[in-house]
Length: 91
Image (cartoon, rainbow, N blue to C red; front, side, top):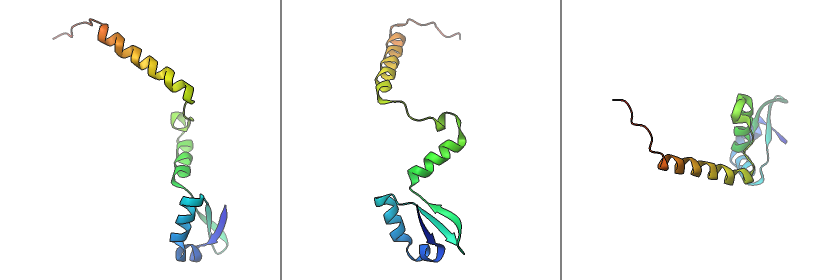
């Protein structure tokens, strides 16, 4: 992670954002030599936010092989619903 003074960051903001997007460079911004902010890619920030909130938002995505199994289960549910005569709702 690169470190840059706030005054330089203000003057070179467009270039920093370019490096952030294309090179995925993260920056610590300092003021009077002390870290005050971080400039990082949006997707990295989203991951940090999800981790903070805990629960399912912090869980990693399911491995690819589970996607097919979940799709089959959902299909089976819809087929069972279509075949079911169901009960009439009370009026």
